[in-house]
Image 1 (cartoon, one colour):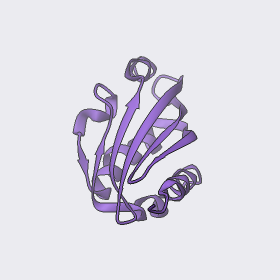
Image 2: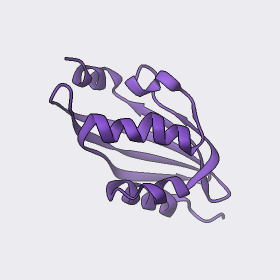
Image 3: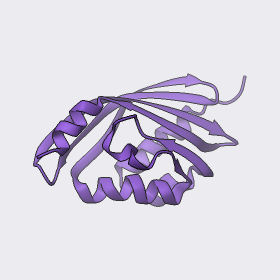
Image 4: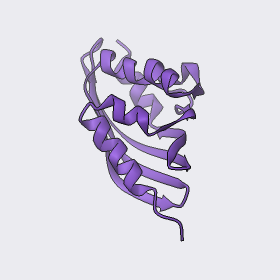
Length: 133
């Protein structure tokens, strides 16, 4: 049986939580395909291809548009080269002052020890309400 990819994902979320962006991007395949949930505000550039596109289109927006944004995983489901992560997003959107607490599902595909693909599932209507004045 192949080695579990769950430790890779646990370390990714820990690096994200501590603000260690270099470690986050070092775990990504150079051709990662990152897809935000349909109708999510950051799905406007789907799919994001490569770490630079993810950094600019997702992480920079989270860092500049939100206060205390967190992706808090609470369960990791091991499916070999696929890992499903259940958790919650939490943060306050700066422009509106509204608080988000939304359940998410992340589906990660791993290839050769690197994150090859990401698919987000989240309550998009809740996110849009928080981000609109």
